[in-house]
Image (cartoon, rainbow, N blue to C red; front, side):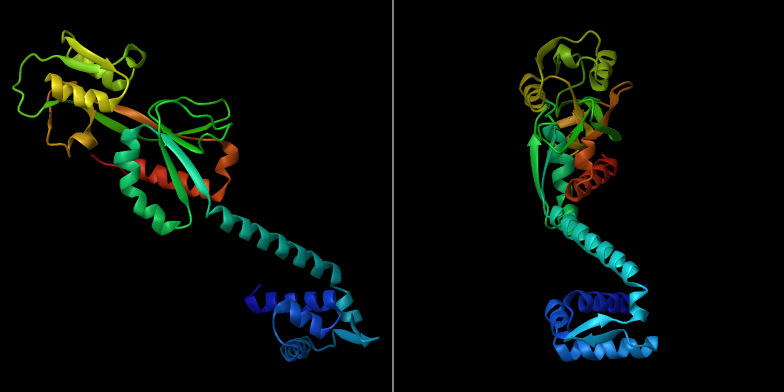
Length: 283
């Protein structure tokens, strides 16, 4: 159905509802002469009169009466579709809260935000740097990117890429036996810690922590080796990569979102942006 056909159906619907050309004109925001001209043109194309004037009101002729039920259905569907479009537009100007570890937010998401702003300028994004899984059920977050499969039972989980870790040492530190800094035992199972165990099985552990930022600064202060994301260390002149076998590890990245929130247009738009940013990341 072309735009002209939709306009004709809308015209007929408003005349039927209003009962007069003036009422239809007020509803459509045009003058009565325009309505009369459009109706006359439509009747010429059809080849029959569509309304009789009875008691000062326009009543459908038998020709138009045969399609009244169908016209009403089309009108209702059009109204529902327009309402859905308006809701979707409003929701695309929504507030979306995303959580992840600070490294992901600072080095992958934040640098790509220009693309989100160009595509969806009405969305306000709230980034929460937190290692703990915020509750989707309690609306503490709409979207999460985690470097491991965690989440509530109702959470939709999708692997969207991987973060590469490399063994690093402070720049200028001569090769040899050096201490290491690492995550606490609760994270001993993650790929980068397993790689560190293989590469430096006898190294002295001088510090453990649960935050990558702490390990980064501690390695510099202590002259220690540490597993760091390749993305960050490539741009950090304070470190150099240790180019040895078994010193590389890929940590899977997962997008997590509650299924109900995934249907909200603004949340879906941010989720697609995040997936593209992480999936397209290269060291």
